[in-house]
Amino acid sequence: MDPRPRNQATALGGSGKLTDCAALITGGDSGIGAAVAVLFAREGADVAIACLPAEQEDADHVRDLVQKEGRRCLVLTGDVKDSSFCDGAVERTVAEFGRLDILVNNAAVLFQYSSLADVSDDALDELFHTNVSGYFYMARAALRHLPAGGCIVNCGSVAGFEGNPSLIGYAETNGAIHTFTKSLATELVARGIRVNCVAPGPVWTPLNASSRTPEQMAGYGDQTDGVPLGRPAQPEEIAPAFLFFASNADSSYVTGETLALFGGRVLAR
Image (cartoon, rainbow, N blue to C red; front, side):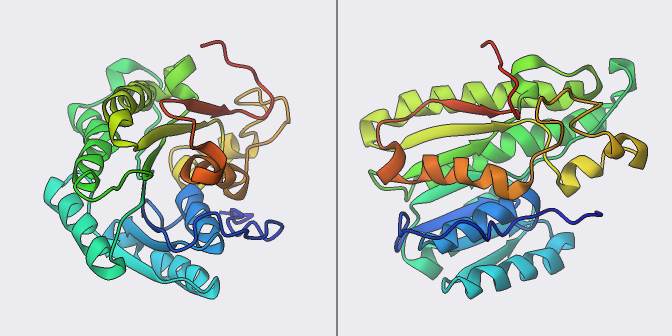
């Protein structure tokens, strides 16, 4: 992408909010996931990032960024649609770091269509198995190890609130993610495990660029989405919301919430 997404949040200094925690971030090789990985490391966490094998090079770059923050980083390649991979990713994280305190469900796919009639069965399966089943599988595996005070932070989308006719399947999966967040938060409150969701609007990431033409990306976040700030967010501008939900210093009294980040646009929900 040109310009490249900003994911290092150089203006933010760490304050030890996640000291000696261990976090597993799916889709941590690029975009929002990469920014979250770097920020968590700066706050003192060791980080495991799960990504597709094809994204190994990007993941290695993120690992270097995490290590520059003085923390350990584990790269796990596989597909979150595979429940056995999710189980193994959690177990390898615990084996490497000795614990798991934070799960960030972020890996997702996005396809753009002009009509519902154009959405194939295979595309719909890919959307739901990645964006919904993948979150479910990772959360289920993580619950074997998350302690009281641990947390799950899901990545949703404003499309899950408003809908989006050109992203109809993606919007549907994000509605599911938002309700999954509330349901799981209700279940886990007695265990002292918090579950929350960050729902961004347009963000300058490879995921969004992969589903749009260069012409669409030229007006992305302004002409195409009506963001009052007039631009898409950078990943480093979204990552602090994940830190807020991950940190007990900030949000120990917050669970079951979905935070919309839409550049000044108010969502009625």
